[in-house]
Image (cartoon, rainbow, N blue to C red; front, side):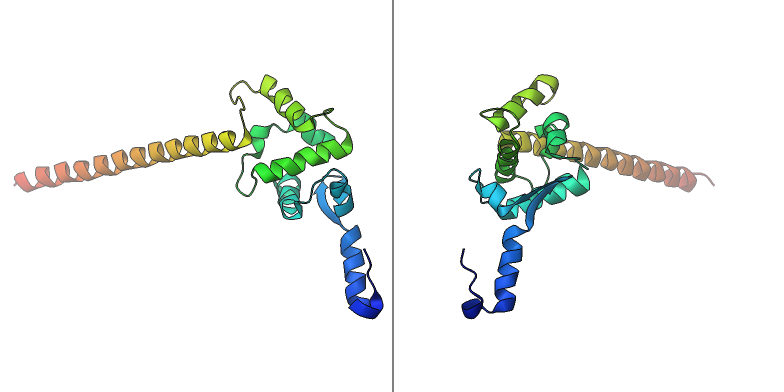
Length: 167
């Protein structure tokens, strides 16, 4: 790309050069630039930044191989990570040569074999299943809390009735 300083100005040209060579995706010790991702036909740089935040800050992934070996797709069914983010992860596996010809499918199959409790059809179905489980758990907590509140209220009513009848 032509970063002509005479047309763009020195500061803008330098900013664009820096941005072109800066890491857009970091997975532990592995860093990927826009050029690295573009080499495997991945241009979802916003999703790449979301993947960086989740994998580095929340899941503490050491590197791309650690992600492939240790982190199951079920672990990535998180807010702010969707199918596009998963496609970025597949591109990173491809860039690192992990998982053969279809690295994303190989990663899914690898973890499906070890995670019988969470068989995977698609990532979207995995996220929907987790959302449904969370809704059921929330409903159960609400129901239990309501039973406790009603029980306390009825107990107070019985105490008040007992003290009202006692002279």
